Amino acid sequence: MTETDYDAIADTYSRTRQVSEHVIAELQSFCSITTASRVLEVGCGTANLIHALVDCTGCAGWGVEPSEGMRRHARVNSRLNVCRGSADCIPF
Figure 1 (cartoon, rainbow, N blue to C red):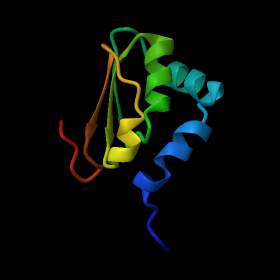
Figure 2 (figure 1 turned 90 degrees about the vertical axis):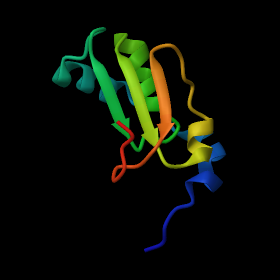
Figure 3 (figure 1 turned 120 degrees about the vertical axis):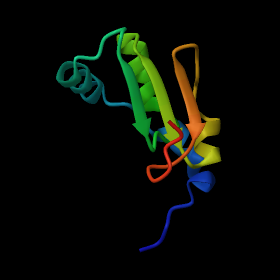
Figure 4 (figure 1 turned 30 degrees about the horizontal axis):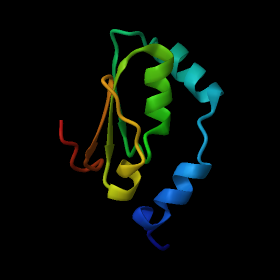
């Protein structure tokens, strides 16, 4: 098994990866996410999923991603922050 170079594929990934509205609806329903919620996505890639969840629910969101290329495409705002890290070393 070869390891994917996410820095190398970040531009294409950002242009082609779409968020499923069904996934957002399921997360919001199952987890009861509200404007008071704080959500962390580990391995967030370009943060499109956590960004959509923040937009949809008004929650506060954080993304953790080891690839600088992926983080570069993340659209952060006052309710969403993305930082460097990985599942084995979460900076929280």
